[in-house]
Length: 176
Image (cartoon, rainbow, N blue to C red):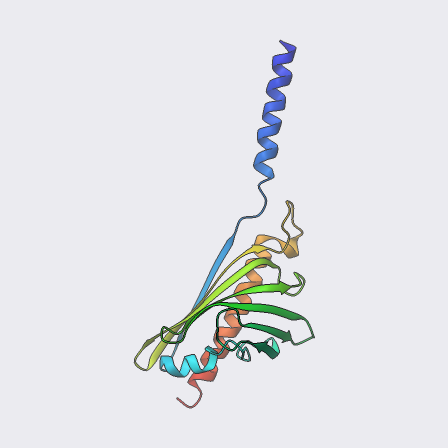
């Protein structure tokens, strides 16, 4: 009888441990903004992968490969941190591109395995920009510290998206 009890306790402990040990789940976020400017004017602001000046925290962009798949860029942020990115898809006709972060310090942006898509849709004199991202939190093991957990990662990315899209809106609507 004692053996059966020990076996049952061991089995429960294994199931409980396995449930806690699954690690992080992929997070997905999306931010959209309406802009009072035609899609071509909006695309002119953010459609060049080699120019990320529309993102307020970016001080300069250096890269190679233009808007070709596998093109790369290094964003130098205000304060000196850098983010390295690679273009995965680009379609100027559809006004969309997808890129991945290849290197970033989680203290700069608390994410791992980040990919993102930007899309501009036009309707005459108005446009809609959608910026979507998928990523894992900054801390890949169990029990992340508060600044590297799922909520912190989502908040950081959504804050970046809001600031960037607000700036695109301001730039595209200027002089409209």
